[in-house]
Image (cartoon, rainbow, N blue to C red):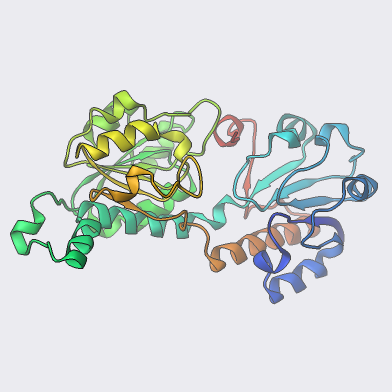
Length: 337
C-alpha cells in the first residue's frame, strides 16, 4: 500500500542522507510531502499531518504527537542520531502504537571503528610518540614503551552495551579480550549470550584495562563515571569516550589525566567546539579527535537506507526492523535528554 510520508530532515539535508538510488526508492514508496532541506513550517506540517502515515525528521519542532490530529500516523523516524527529542512525546507514541525509530544503527560500525582507533592510539602511546617525533625528543624501542600497554589479551569494560558496543566487541575479537559490561536495563542473560560478563560499575572500574564509555545519555546517567570512580583508576588503565561526554565528570577526567593517573581517548566534549585553551588538548597521555567518529558520508547515507528499508516494509504490510525502535521495555534506557 502506498504511503504518505512527511520528510523534514533539517538540520540534515536531503542529499546528505539520501543518495540518488535511495532517494528514488523513497519516492517509489508513495507520496513524499515536503522533502526539502529547509525546516518544514509548523503551519504546513499541521495541515499535512492528519493524512500522513509516517514522518521522517531531523528535529521535532512541532506539538507533541499526542496533541496533533494524527490518527493515521504509524511511524515517526528520526535521522538525527538517537532518541533525543522529548518534545515529540515518546509516551504518547508508545501508548498509541506509533513506531518510534532512530537511525542510531547507522552509526554503530563507524563509531566502533573510531573507538578502536582511539583505543589503540591511547594504549600504545601513539599520540605522545608522534608529538615527540615532531619535536625531536622521542625515546626509541624499550625506552619509549615504558608507559605503554597492549590491547591483546586485555580486559575491556563496556559502560553501556548497545549498537556501538556490539560493533566494537566484534572488532575486538582478534585481540582475544575478556569483555565486561555494565548496562543495568539489559537482561544479564543477554549479555552472557554475547560472551560478556555483566558486572556492577565499581567492579568494571576496578577490573577493566580499557573502559569504553558507550552508553546513550539519559537524565539519570549524567557523570555516571564520577570523579570518585575516575580517581580509582591506575596508570595502566585507559578510558575511551565516544558516545557522549555527558556520561563523564569531564573536569575530573581532565585533572586526573593531567596528573598522569590514566590514559584517555576521547571524541566528544561537554562543549563543542572545544575551547582552544582547554588543557586536555595538550596532554601527551590523551588522544583527542574533534567529534569525528560518526560524521562520515558513508554513515549518513546509511541513515537514508535504513529509513527507506523500513518504509518499504511498512508499505508491504510488514513490521519495520532496520532502525532502532522504542518499546515500553527499552524506553528508559534509550530515551536521551
